[in-house]
Every structure is written in structure tokens, then in C-alpha cells.
Length: 208
Image (cartoon, rainbow, N blue to C red):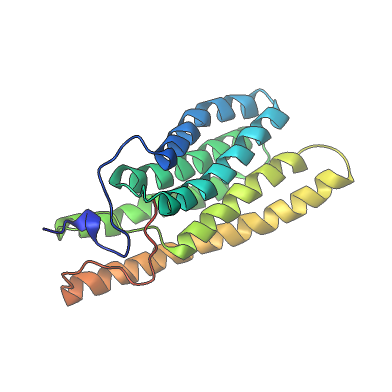
């Protein structure tokens, strides 16, 4: 029998201890350390953790496919780690007055809104949707933007350049973040109305 977690193009399994999941766990454990470093203004150490988070986020997906270690727990861990880093960075940057409060409100509002289509899916017997390419692109933009904004809080020409590029990534990432939410809503609406028993959300890419 095929469960909701098995729907899509990549088979899932129940393995917990895999290399991709280990990378996701490491990202999760690094989140409070990163936030503390930002708040005490140890920016270079904080940037090192962010670089690791960005690289591991890319690497765990590749390893899952190469090693055939795509798992159900991984489909939850990977986006959870991404969101925690985004929220932790937002908290740190807002507290230090590097980004305005409205940016945090816009991004948090998007996450709250996404609870609605997820609730609809659960009511109709479906699990969480796979991560959409647009949503992943938005997350990557924000993960690149925040370290640049952190660099931009310093003095010098290089800091000014980093700040400009960082804000460009921030605006693109925020726009894509909400665009992905609109696409998810449309996909969920189509899925529920059509009664598609395959459960496949078109255009979505399952993640480890």
C-alpha cells in the first residue's frame, strides 16, 4: 500500500541514521550556537556556521540521491533546519538593528499562512507537500542574503558592497517565498478539487 509519504517521484524509507540526516541534525544543533554568536557580535564565527549550513543544505540532497538514502524523517528535517536558520538569523539581525522589523513580520506571516494549506491537506488524508523548486530557491536566496547583511553591518567598501548584494538577495528571496506559498495554495486547491489519488503535486521536488 502506498502512503501519502510515498507519493512523488522518489521512494522514501524509514531510515533515521543516514549521512543526509546527519547533516540536517548538525544544522539543527548549530542553530542556537549561531544565534548566540550573532547576539554577542562574534560575526566571523557566526558566518562560518552559516557557510556550513548552506553547504550542507546542498550536500544532503545530493548524498540522498547518490547513496539512495532519501527518508521520511529527512523530508521533515531538511526544511525544518532551513526555517530555523532563517528565523534565528532574523532574530539576531532585528535585535542588532541590521534589518527592519517589517521584514521579519513578512517572513513569519508567510510561515503562518502556510499552515492553512497544510491543514487542508491533512483533512483530506495527505501529508506535507514536497519542497517546491521556487520555495527552495527562496530559501537559498535568504540563506545567502543574511550573511551578506551581517557583513554589511561592518565598515569599509567591501561591507557596502555586501550590504547592497545582501538586500538584493533579501528582496528576491522574500518575493519568491510568497510566490511559492501562492503556488502551493493553487496546487493544494487543484489536488483537493480533482480528488487526485496519486497525491503528486506537479512541479514539486521531493527532498531528503
